[in-house]
Amino acid sequence: MIKLIVSLGNPDIQYKHTRHNIAWQLLECLPFHHELNWKNKFKGQYSFISLHSKKLYLLKPLTYMNLSGESVILTMDFFKIQTEELLIIHDELELPFGFISLKNGGGLGGHNGLRSIESIIGTRDFKRMRLGISKPFHGNITPYVLGGFSIEEKISLPSFLEKSAGILLKAVESEDFNNMTKKYRKYNTIPNIE
Image 1 (cartoon, helix red, strand yellow):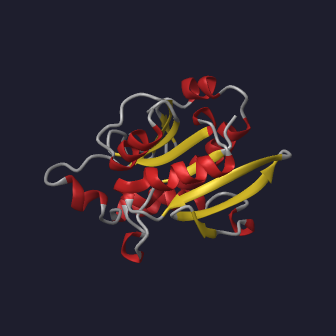
Image 2 (cartoon, rainbow, N blue to C red; image 1 turned 45 degrees about the vertical axis):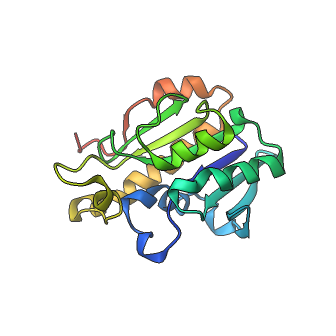
């Protein structure tokens, strides 16, 4: 059962609409987003909501990506969240834009946020929702992930985020996350994009 959803991103306003902050953008598409009352604590912003009589916590670390683990461990310790109850949402270069992947454990793909979380909580065996942002054709990765979406991507982004939010809720409600990973291992939310 998922009790804590962590969306990875960078706090400064200039990063708000960047590829690296797509996980924060996803939260705004949750049907209950307007009901969330965010509080500053645990080196981040957290909120909670009752879904199906169960309390679900949401966290946005404000530490910058490469220190995300500091915020995650403080939140987990305070609310007594176990690793198997944790789901991390993050951008994923290895997936094409518009694709999502649910995954349990595995490699970190060079993602600084995931690396920080593993180093601090002591394991990489946590659930993930990977949001595809595609790889740049050439050049440095950093300006690409810290840059905005292309004109074509901006057109499809609302649909991508809405469908991903729906899948996230299914994952939260599901009693069998491993079964969800089979269905959404590499799922295209925008079928007209290959």
